[in-house]
Amino acid sequence: MGLYSFIAIVLMLSTLSECQSNRVQKNENEVIMQTEYKHENMDTIIPDKLNIAFILGKFDPTQTNGFTQIDQKYADRAGLWLNIEAYEAFIRMWEAAQKDNIDLIIRSATRNFDYQKGIWERKWMGETTLSSGVNLGNSKYSDLEKAKMILEYSAMPGTSRHHWGTDIDLNAFENDWFEKGEGLRVYYWLENHAHEFGFCRPYTSKINGRTGYNEEKWHWSYMPLSKGYLLFASQHMSDADIQGFLGSKTADDLQVVKNYVLGVEGCGK
Ligand SMILES: [Zn+2]
Image: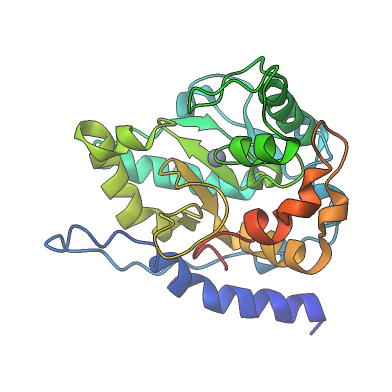
């Protein structure tokens, strides 16, 4: 047995409990289904071609083996891409949700380095206002302060889990939306069932001291793959790899790999 196969099996065996640990605890009166998730193709957890350029999102998903375009019936627009295995798992989840009258809509999927660089630099230059209402154009803030404010919700190019093709944003980009009415139904369904399909939520509440991005009730990760990518990042990625965009020099001071890439709860951490 090769080293990677061994690592893959170890990862596989620890997948279930960690994904389940992410389930919501609030609705204690509900019976929670405990369905085991089994990974069918363990070799894909750590692909042979896994390398730092891939982890940094420096590739074009439309030209990369293993990626596929998402059918528009599952998304809010055409032209979104995902890792094929993550996509197939999502379709199974989507169909199960439909049976429970829950509509899952992909709002964002794979975003490579160049795409994330566009998001980041538009905020950096003030072309886009931050969700807090702050505009960083002609601002009084230091580079470090600017980077910290953008990082509340947007990843630094090179550090986004969306680079990997395993992570999706569902239905709405506001936590508020998931706290009442239809959004709350979607939230409960996902918290109780997403793990059955291999999905977990990496950006949980920070009350337990998690570092990194604020809570995102919309962001879900296909852990059988992303867990391996996170492990690879923890072993091979450093802040020095983060470069090539406005403000990238702050990566070192902010220790973005430690605090943001690895700042997740459950989901393989
Ligand atoms: Zn996201």
